[in-house]
Image (cartoon, rainbow, N blue to C red; front, top):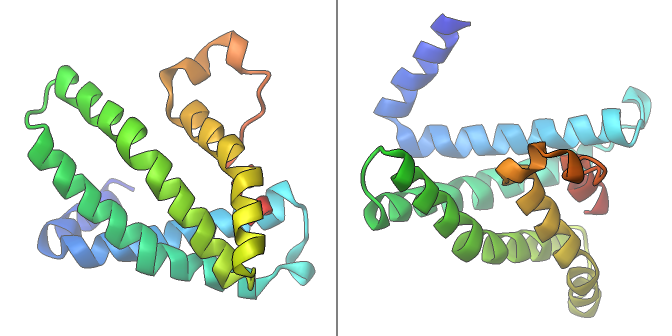
Length: 162
């Protein structure tokens, strides 16, 4: 496993943009497979390959490039490798970037799934707040506190709503 990680790191240093995009598309695709099989319990025979392909395309053409670009912006806004710098990056990410990114992600996924503009707006109004709260829950250190454990947040919630 360590050798695989080293190989990935070497590829990242040589081709950061390509590897970022391929990684994002692959992870979004794996997330959809996990959602369909473990959360929705569809079974292999009922797996929606078209949905997985759409999700992967969002990963390749939206998530990878946008997040890769955002990390470059974050590195220029906040420099250093201290805990304080990491905290500042997390705050910038969660306050400034996450709300915009999530809204755009939901709109793109709705459009790829054939929603009309009106349906997409209604879906965004219905799902955006819950998705943003789920994002904050998953990315927050508070998610480890007992008070939050009753809020059963999984990435499957987002995938199953798309």
